[in-house]
View (cartoon, rainbow, N blue to C red):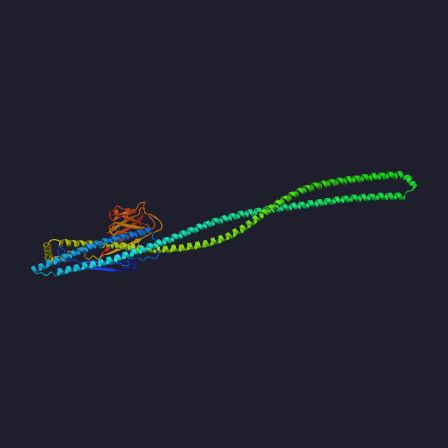
Length: 590
């Protein structure tokens, strides 16, 4: 359970610009007459301790992360404080005028006293001392308040200058953040363009590689066809050569057979010539001629048959060879034409292939360059992201520090408002007493003399019964806060006009069923129960304004039914399960 306590004596320490000032005013009448009607004595003791260091120290560049709402709240608060100081200054001026008027009346009363002395011969030294003491105390109060006013004015100017510096720093930081954001956007756009161009190049390279592979496949197919055609051509050439060799062999065989038969015939003729005799010639002449004729006929028939058969075979083979040669010639011519076409197409594609290979190499080189550039930009982007992340973390830490200091300043401001309210009440009481004195002393001369006579007559009366309401007016205002969870009390109005709570967490909280109570002297004096529409947003304040102050409510404030929250007492916040979540106790002790 977090707890923080602010005591107003009053000492506030933030930045060392104005030192601590304590003013103690004692007014005491020593058994003599009093300017108050009815005599008596009056002792007035006022203690104020205005804490120096009212200018908080902010970390460099921290306000750049502060929200516009906080800055607007600070400016509004400063404007209200300045207006309040102007009102107090006017009241001080009025008070000084009244003091001067009282001094003039004192002179008149002194003259009246001198006249009465001459008439009645009584000692008015005690009255004189009392008036002199009152005048000295009043002058001291005026001097002290003038000094305090001057210091407050100096503090206000210093705070305004510091706020202006912080505003300029915030504007510069916002410009820097905008520039970095624009640079990141440009880098992201450039990175996207590079990635798109890289994807297009990769797609084009894949298309060119597919086209190159298809052309290579066609080339291999054509080369295979050319090889097959060449093999067929070689085979047909071999067959033709073999057929020609067979034909030549058959012709040589025919010639050889003819030569053999001619040799046999010649031998037979020679034998016939050697064995020729008359008897035999006569006997065998007819038979030999017949046999020779038969042999010649048989030989001629056989030769004709062989020649016809060989001629037939030769013609058949020649026809087959001619048909094969024609077919081979046609296929060869077709293959040659196809080869010429393929060679022409290859010759035509060769420059394109060379160009595509060169373009492919160039694209690969460009791809490598783009990849290297992409890697460099990625590294630079990562370094920028890390640097921005560290800057964001640093600014977040500075913002947390500033928010803590702002919280301390707001607590101090609340305590100061409470003290100003208490001082205002004391001042109003003092003004009332002075007004009463002025009213009593502003009558006719005879009335003043009669009043002075009455005061002298009642001198021995109740010496201590008519004490001023300012007697022993040394006050101490204490403010004690505590919280269980993210919801806590942020502050309240010094006159009881409003009370504020704040959600310090990171998530919104539905306040349905939660209740704020104002406990005075142990009893629940005022209360308000939240509805389902009331959501405490993270980092946002919720103000509950009393109906008596609804004219001063801002947009988004909650107007409650009770006329006031009362300036003192204890605020208690309970959830829908009646569990206490936060408290804020305000006390004004003597």
